[in-house]
Every structure is written in structure tokens, then in C-alpha cells.
Length: 221
Ligand code: SAH
Ligand code: DHB
Ligand code: MG
Image (cartoon, rainbow, N blue to C red; front, top):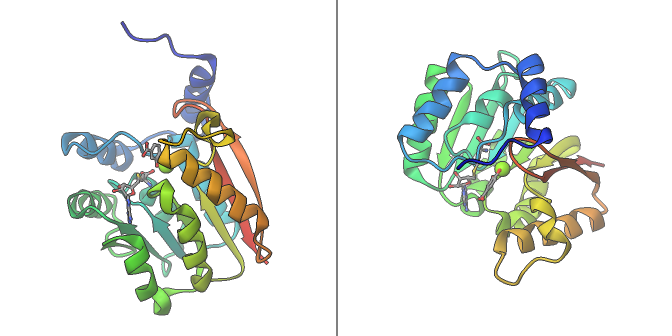
């Protein structure tokens, strides 16, 4: 038996169909992710559109993503770039990175988006000459979120936008169980973000097809 969709999910479909219709490249990226056994943890269409709009609003020319998976969010973000813009995305799993590269190529973004394989805390220091990044999207392992925040501060400029997915975890961040590493990581990240004098930030709760979660939005002072 499958659960009936909740009202938030029904409205998410309504919003996504109106404002974030899919296309062959996006559908193909999800299809290839499933065919290759990647976990189904991509952002939603509407969340992709929001990332795209953030990037367009700030006129981002250099984008950094941490946590590529099959490149679904990467496609949304890279589509916001001007012709001479560039996106760098960091992925730990070589097999996932291969899938992402194929998806980006098929989306016509092969020249603009580069996937770098490795643990992001190891590969980040190598990116100095590619920056400063106008927009950074954190979406990798939640335990390292606070460390990522600290590390990306070397790769941004005043006015840069830092976004982080999954910082509410269905409310688990309020009082994370000791064995919930992701919720503990997100809670530590939120605390560090709020206390960081170099940034001004807030968290936006999100509901819908991806359940109840949140997006952190921060601006470098
Ligand atoms: N941004 C993607 C989803 C990312 S899922 C989308 O919305 O389409 C999180 C990804 O982070 C996974 O692919 C996982 O392999 C990767 N990841 C986990 N630990 C990592 C690390 N230490 N460095 C880089 N990537 C990591
Ligand atoms: C998980 C990771 C994500 O980036 C996400 O958006 C949802 C879930 C996870 O690891 O469970
Ligand atoms: Mg996520």
C-alpha cells in the first residue's frame, strides 16, 4: 500500500508544474541516476528553480556546489550562468561523478560545469584560482556542513551567497538523537552559521515532495 500524497506534496506538484516544468535533460538526469542506482535524494524541481533564480538574481558567474550526485541540481544552477560563467561541483563517489558528467554533457553544459572527484574538504583547497565564487550550494554529507562553511569562506567575496540544503531534517535539528549524524551536523551548522560575524543569514523551512526540511540562505558581509 502506498501513502496518499499529503496536501503539501499535491501543492508542490501544482507549483512545480506551473513554474518549474521538466524537460528532456532534467528527466534524463533523474532517469540515469535511477538506472545507475544512485539514491533518490535530488532537490525537487521547485527547489531547482529557486536555486536558478538565486543565481540569476545575483548575476552569478562562478558557482561552487558541494555534493553533485547525478548532477540534477547542477543542471538547474549551471543553466543560470551567462555564457562565460563556470560551475565547479565536488563529488566524493567516482561512480556518481561519471553519471553526473554524462548528464551534464547531455544537458549541453559539459563545457561550463566541471565535476571534481574526492572528499570535498580535500579538494576545496585546490580551487583557489577558480574563485572567488559568487554562489556556493552546500548539499553533501551533513556531518561536515560546519567544516564546509569554514572552508568555503576562503573562496567567497563580500556579497557572495551561500545556500545549504537539508538544515531542518523534519524538525530533527531541534533535539537530534545521538545516532542521527545528519541532524546533529545540520544543528551544528545552523548554530555556527547564526554565530558567524562574517555572514548574515536565515533558514527557510520547506515542505512538499521532499518532506519537511529547510534551506539556509547566507550573504557574505
Ligand atoms: N545536489 C544533488 C544531491 C546531492 S546528494 C542534487 O540535488 O541533485 C549528496 C552528495 O554528496 C552524494 O552524491 C554524496 O556522494 C556526496 N558526498 C558525500 N560526502 C561527500 C564528501 N565528503 N565530499 C564530496 N561529496 C560528498
Ligand atoms: C539526504 C541528502 C540530501 O542531500 C537530501 O536532499 C535529502 C536526504 C540524505 O542523505 O538522506
Ligand atoms: Mg539535499
